[in-house]
Amino acid sequence: MTGVTSWAIPEGAVLNLGMLLERNARYQGEKTALVYESRRLTFRQMRERVHRAANALAAAGVRKGDRVASFLPNSLEILDLYWAAARTGAVMVPLSTLLRGPGLASLLADSGARALVAAPALAETVESIGSGLAIPPGSRFLTGGATRPGWMSWDAAVAAAGDAEPPDAGIRPDDPYNIIYSSGTTGLPKGIVLSHRTRIAYATLFASSWRMTPESVVLHAGALVFNGAFLTLLPALFLGATFVLLKQFDPGRFVEVVAKEKVTHVFLVPSQLIALLATPGFDEETVGSLEMVGSVGAPLHGEHKEELARRLPGRFTELYGLTEGFMTILDRDAPPEKLHTVGAPPPFFEMRIVTADGRDAAVGEVGEIAGRSPLLMDGYWNRPRQTAEAVRDGWLYSGDLGSVDADGYLTLADRMKDMIISGGINVFPRDIEEVAARHEAVREVAVFGVPHEKWGEAPVAAIVLARPGAISADELRTWINERVPAAYQKVHEVVFHDDFPRSAAGKTLKREMRDKYWAGTGGRI
Image (cartoon, rainbow, N blue to C red; front, top):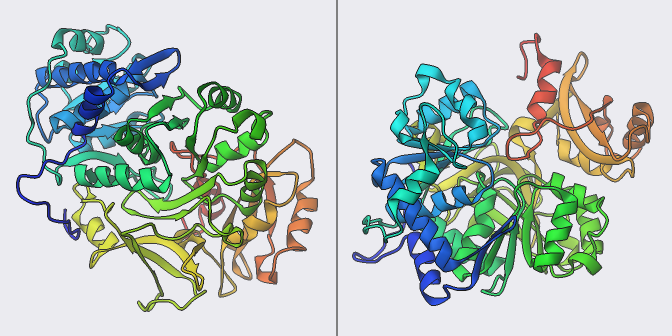
C-alpha cells in the first residue's frame, strides 16, 4: 500500500499469528482456552477445530492471499475462522451482522471475497444481493448445520476436512492478516489492511500494557468483528490466557459471568459502561476479580470516569485510537489529575499535535492529532489516494483535534468534522457534553451544530435521560447554559431521544441526528 513504511525482518525469520495457537496447544494443551456459553474448550480442542476450518477452506479452493468474509455473530465459528486464516495465509474480512443489502454488497465486492461463511439467520440478507454476489455457491457456507439451496454446510465441510495439520503456507510478517472495515461514522467504510506483523505487535504490546499474565481471564462482551476485540483477544492467545466470549452484551449477564469466571480483564464501549454503572452488582463485592476495566471506541465523559474510579478503584483504563494505527493509553495507575485526559502514547509510539498551518502546536494549543507506531496499517484496501491522504511522511493524521499538557498527556477536543463554528468561534461539542453529563438526569449526551440565522451554527444537545420524565428540555437547557464556561457554548436547544442511532460498533452517530437539521440548506451535510 502506498505511503506506509514497514520494519525489516531478517531473512529466514518466522513470524505469523498461526504460531500462537500451535504453541499453546503443544505446551499447555489441557488448559482452558475458550469459554462460550456452556462450551469450554482446551487449547488442544481449539487447535483441532482450527485445523478442520483451515482444511475446509483449502478444500473450497481458498489459497494464501484470498479474502474470506464472515457474516457471523459472536460464535465459536468466527474464532475458528480467525485462527484458520492465521494458519493458511487467507485474509479475514469480518463483516457486521447489522449490514443490509446494498451495504453488504458493497463490502463483499470491495474486498473481492473468495469465500463467505454466514449464519443461517442471515442467509436471506446475503441472497437479497442477487446477481451482485460474485461468490459462487460452492464457496458460500452456512453454519449451524443448516441446509439451503445455493449454500454449502459449514459443519459438513469441517467434518469432512479432518484435523490434520495444514501445510505450511509460507506466511511472512508483512502478509496481510485481515481487512477491518471502518464503522462509517463519518462516511462510507474503508477497508483497513493489517498485517501479521501488526497483529503480533498488538499481542505483545497490549499484553504488557494491560498487565496480563498466562493466569488472566479475559472477557469480551462486544462484537468480535470490530478492531476493539483484538485489543484483548490477541494478548490472551499470546500469553495462553483464558478468553471468555459473551454471545451478546447484557449488563446483568456480564456481572454474572465476571463473578463466575473470576474475570480479570475487559474492554467495553462507553454505552456498555454506562449501562453497567446502573446495574446492581457492578461493585467491588461482586466483580472484584477485575484488574482492568477498559473503555474504547469513543470518549467516556468525566462524570462516568469518576464514578468508575470510585466504584472500582485502580482498574479504569482508557484507550483512544484509530484502527489505522495510532493509540494513546490512560493507564489505570495514571495520576488522578490526568483522569480527564486520554493518556499518553505507549512505548514505540510517537505523537504530534499539528496546527492548521502545519506547525507543531504549543502546550495546551489545539491541533490535529498525528502519530506513528508499530501498529500502522498497510493502507486502505484498493484506495491509494485515501491512504496517501491519511499517512503523510510516515505520520498517520487522525482527523481528531486535541492538545497535550506539559507532561505529554493528550486531551481530546473533538473530531474535526464535529467542530461547530458559531459566530466565527470554534466550539468543541465535547466541552459542552462534559457539562451536561454531570446532571443526574442525563444518561448520555451528544452535542452537534445546527444552522442558525445569526451565528451560522449553534449547538444542540441530544439527550438520553436516565429516567423518562426526570427533567424537562427547557429546565435542562437552562441548567447546562448556566454552567458552560463561555456564552458561545450555550445550547440552542435540548432534544430527548429514547436512544441514539449507533454504528455497528456501538459508536453514537451524530451525523444521523444532525443531518435532518441541515437537509435543504446546502450546508454542512
